[in-house]
Image 1: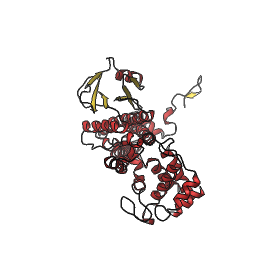
Image 2 (image 1 turned 90 degrees about the vertical axis):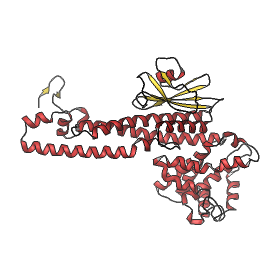
Image 3 (image 1 turned 30 degrees about the vertical axis):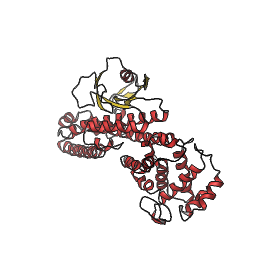
Length: 423
């Protein structure tokens, strides 16, 4: 093969991105297939290459169709509790959910012209959904505003009781979430909204790529290289989406602890204790991980309950009690909309059951209660007892275990209590 003596490299070597691939794949990726088959190789070999190329193309199309079926808008955007029937309803519901979770006056979500289905210009950001009926409908990126500053810097901007948070993706900024405050807001809540913004931005970018992939799938003359490129774009965005989902859950758990007025990370501590119990019981790694996640997320429903209820030092009204009792159902609804965490739902659903069958929601008894639920219930109670609360000081480990042992067979599984004691 001819070489460039000055650089010591082949003039016709494979491109760097395809060094480990079949040389024939590179030829077709460079769109030289017709020239090669017509001028340099036999008809039989050309037919074999063509068949192989068609098989590869069909394989790529199947992979893309599978990705689209899993990560379409109706699946990936189900991060908060809403009915995804129409775009405007989706974003209005998300804005309402954010207001409820972080307790701000109003929330508005704006999308760039690339991601909004409304007619607008390239300089416009359109209101997609808001809790404020008087929210501005269109922003021009050449104007002066907090949101425009947020778009240009790609950073969170705070000014005059307004916080603008960019909706990032690895491609562009898809939009902005604006919060109108009534007072101060905890940093944990801002982190939560940031994770939602990143999740939404990546979802929008992913849907845009899916739309382009569907166009290619309908093109009978599409090049294999085009299918490979769109597959790479989709898989990169999907990887980002999974990272942002995990970040969202972690920030949600931290926000729950903030709202519940825990002086330490109760959710994190519960999850860690649950994992130690699992290891004492020698459970397999997958089960241990699922129980750990369930421990981290077991109180997620509290995020939709007003923070003031958790600061009350005294008896709550029946209405307030009803709001708190609904938290478990709200948390389950939330988790069911996060695909990779749906397996933890049974553990959370039945963590309020009692070993004697007198618990909720279904009165399950003994071994009929999922083991993960029994472990989380013990870990949750133990961590609550051994942590400072607004109305009492933390118990010692010995004090907490003494109380819990008295309720073996009624509230708790004795095997789980023994494993906790051995941790």
